[in-house]
Image (cartoon, rainbow, N blue to C red):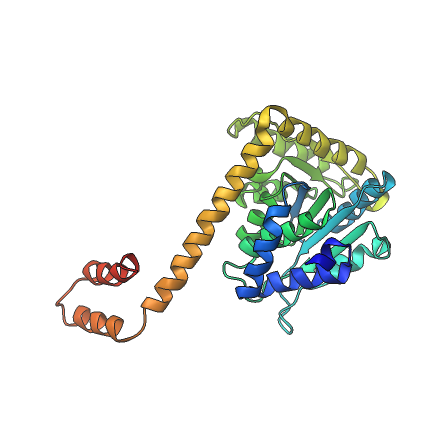
Length: 308
């Protein structure tokens, strides 16, 4: 741990690998890093694959580095079907920063962590937070429930869409409207950008008010267009949160959700253990013989948990 705090990038990478694996070593890392966190500001970037998230992330890194600000990037990727590790495509697209000592980029996938990425990612973010960069960017691949949860756990979440009416509809279905603090319509030089913006505006009009209306920015990340406006929107949202303790309240709600998720996962694990063995087999047979009903049997199984 001390090596990571002293700036050893290899040590930081090893700590994140331990978090990915889960188990007792990951818990030791969590206990060591948690008291050191809470200083970095996290930005989540999510959206459908191929939308240009990595290119936009690369542009945001450049803006931070132009101001000599250190940044860490956690690219939450699907697991490789061969190695179980993270697919490194996102890191390949950010190679222009690979040799910059002020930038740390790490792809991540979960291989054994209880609760999967939804719980492993916050632990990895805390590792990065503990070692000192003031900004952490979390990029997720895909718009499944887990990816949206991971990106939505950031302080500010940027949702990247492409022109096309279907994207706005899919964003609504995937729950991205609920987590988005900033919308970036990337590849805005293509037909349909205005229609996508109009659809988003209409959806925002009918959504529940929450004090902050997500701005919609058109970008062409490959040409370096619009990234300055995205960064300005991120900074504006940060200023909004830092006023009147909103940021602290958001982080407190996030920690409460994480705690509840950990408790649920632990209980699920214990339930799996109880759903095997002699007692379980006896109750199953009693159900098949119509001597007890499923709820009565479940009550007896659960009673073992409450008796512990």
